[in-house]
Amino acid sequence: MRGIYSHMSAASYTLKPLPNFGAEVFGLQLRDSVPGPVVQRIKDDVSRHRLLIFRDQGIISGPRQAEIGGWFGDLESTFRKHPRSPHPDVFRVSNDPAEGCIGVGREGWHIDGSFQPAPFSHSLYHIIDVPSRGATRFVALTELLSSLPVDQLAHWRRLSMRSDRRDQALKPLVYAHPGTGHPTMCFHTGMTAAYVEDAGSERERTLPAQSLNREIEAAIEAQPVYDHCWRAGDFLIADNLALGHEASPDTQCPVSEVGLRVMHRSTVKGTHAPI
View: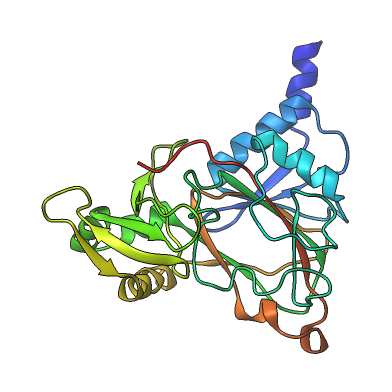
């Protein structure tokens, strides 16, 4: 009987894959208790699709969002706090400083936690107030790397990045995803102090960040970027190590122009330093 229940539970939602990566999820309410087999399926589907978009979730409380994040590991909150945040591990962002932290995600294309010894493994995003426009943009890093000319990819593999925040230890720009083994990136085009070529060798030299950041951003913009246009009730779970992202400029348009934007984000502590 348990085997039948587990099979039925694990099939309790449907997926609609997006054209290049990611999938929409229908038929599951994250506010409700989710059986263990379904949690495991969600974790497997995040690994497989890299981005899951749960539609029609209503408003999920801060404590419940933290519980969902805990399916993937310990939460790690390194961000400035806002008085209106509903939980210590929920980062509240907005286009209104009275409602949340502003300007978040507009520094450049990045993964979350590039400044950590081990970048965050997963990021969870839940829209609370939906503006008329203001997308979050995602790019698949394995496909980005595979699209590069051979010489350019070879050069990127020789580079290490040094964050301009917190942990400034060198991290390889290109490395193997700890879960899948696929090539991925540790980067932030707005928070990198410098790149080092051939780190640890006799040929080591430091390169200014600006030109290489522009090179990375140009390569990203040549990819099939997914612009997530938020709808009420959206809840996203992303494999942070597999996808780069940024907030579009419209996310910071004034409330008088696009309406109030409030989003809750949680991040899961990384357990693997890029090597």
